[in-house]
Length: 188
Image 1 (cartoon, rainbow, N blue to C red):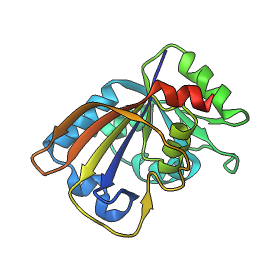
Image 2 (image 1 turned 60 degrees about the vertical axis):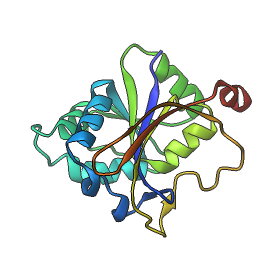
Image 3 (image 1 turned 180 degrees about the horizontal axis):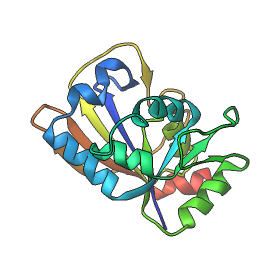
């Protein structure tokens, strides 16, 4: 069965949607290798509507010499949205209706991991609904103050198991977690 894997940059104070915790500021050779490893393990992308539109605006115009551009431009993109009707950045498909059922079916298809680059609201929803299989956080050594926090609005305890941890030379700590199986049973 395929896994849904999320990868996010996050500040020390938990902000995931701020220019100060942007991947561009913190990317070095080690971080590029970390991102390339995630790309190599995936063959499709899962996005919320807002992230789809923001990523399309930038990445569709980047050359395929950049590994992330090549991956995002060529990979099937599955977009969860009730508001977007047209997906110009192809290949792409809308996912609507019973999202749990649709994503479970998608995970059951042959293939590699389904990558969630960004989309913090979607990551939060996946985590709360027992559909996220792996959470990779790159914790940047900065406190940014205001901004969207990944775990805001979560109203129940979710237990995570640390699978890997490494520290890059720029001070970014990369943590890989798997949600505990008890979370999945409780959410089902």
